[in-house]
Image (tube, rainbow, N blue to C red; front, top):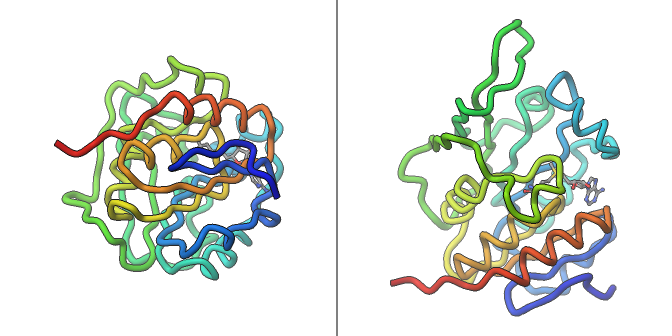
Length: 210
Ligand SMILES: C[S@@+](CC[C@H](N)C(=O)[O-])C[C@H]1O[C@@H](n2cnc3c(N)ncnc32)[C@H](O)[C@@H]1O
C-alpha cells in the first residue's frame, strides 16, 4: 500500500486501520491513539461529523503490535476497555461539555497500558484556555491539543521510538512525534483529514534537544 504522505519521521496511510500495513515499518514501540467517541452525549458531534461507529476491536489489533498503549477513550467508553495500568487526567476547565449528571465535564481520561519508555512526572495535565483551533487542524472537528499530546508522547516513548496511531484525524500524533524525534505511522479513513494531517506534518520540523 502506498502511503498518502511520508517523510523521514511520519507515514500516513489513507486507510481503515484494519487494512494498514503496520508491520512494514519494523518494531512498534507504542500505540497512542484517539478513537472516535461514539456513545452518550460526548459522542454526538462526532456522529454528526459522519464518523463510523468504531468498537474497541482496534485494541486487540494494537496488542498484537505492542503492550504499550495510550488511548483517550472518552468517559462514556471507559468501561469498554480492559482495566488499565494507570489513568491520566487531562483537565480542561476552559472547555467543559455536559455530563450525564446534569452538570459539566471538565476532564478527559487517558488509559495507559504496558510499561511506557518515558516518564509522566505528574499524571495530570491542565490546558487553559483550550485555544488550539487556529491552524489547518481547525477543519477537523476534534483535534487534540499539541500540549497534551506532546506530554503523552514523551511519557509513552523515547527518542527514536516508533509510534502508531490508528485514528490520525488531523495528524496531531504525527506532528508531536516528529517534533520530539519519534517516528509515527498513522492511518486515517477520510481523505480530507489525511490532507489536513499531511499538510500539518509537512510544515512541522523536528525540534532538536538543547
Ligand atoms: C477522534 S478523531 C482523532 C483526532 C486526532 N487525535 C487529532 O488530533 O486530530 C478519530 C478519527 O478516526 C477516524 N476513523 C474512524 N474510523 C476509522 C477507521 N476504521 N480507520 C482509520 N481511521 C478511522 C475518523 O475519521 C477521525 O478522523
